[in-house]
Length: 313
Image (tube, rainbow, N blue to C red; front, side, top):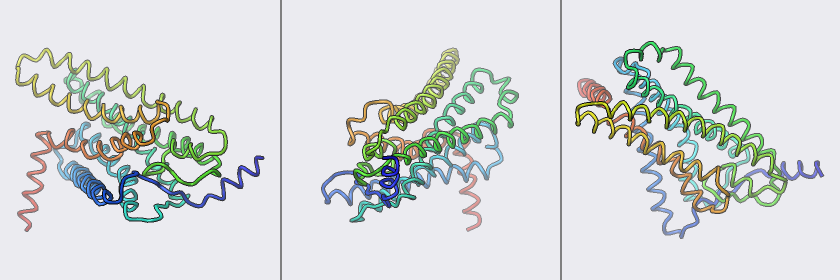
């Protein structure tokens, strides 16, 4: 029986990504929406990284984290969007077995890394607002590097575990994935072997990743709000609350979608696709706008960069 399961596993050479089950007339509209969002992701995140790298004034812990966030957003959306757009015009909608493995591994790596980066950024803002006199001491370059390196490390470890357990399943029932990219849950539905271990790994990783990062983010912003309430200036309080609410709004969209996708019963495949859109395309598009382009320092750096280019031209 074991040999038979292994043979069935090796027989699968590719998968079919169903994507969104809509009438063909809507394929062009969906393609244009995906294209518009992806172009905004490219422009926003590449622009953000360029500004941070080229302007010495942005050589601070906050922008170090933002630069890495833009890098992560750019790459994990690029793992999903180009293939999804291609499939709107492809009759086969196929992805090779190796391509499916790579897609799940890279997406898992970057999405987990993003969660830890968001927690690190919340902690950074907590120190900056609640303990400004100790900020330069506590948020040292060494600590910032360790936090970012740790984010990528945990992303890599969780991705290896999730990918290895997922593709250790036997896919002998079907090769049709009811999703627009290779994800663990849709692949579970194709398995003709017992997915108990894979489900437990997915659930355990979700708990280990989501709970600590959410706690750090929520507690950090509770202290930030408490400190902001002590500001005497009404305008200062309004500006601070506006920034905090924007940050928490994006975090809520990301974590709400991830929790629905991985910590609730797998009963609604179509809703899962919508939830996946929130963290695979929507948040990478919003992050440069919410975290960066509303920032005064970033705006000044952008004007300076554009001024240099105009001078060259």
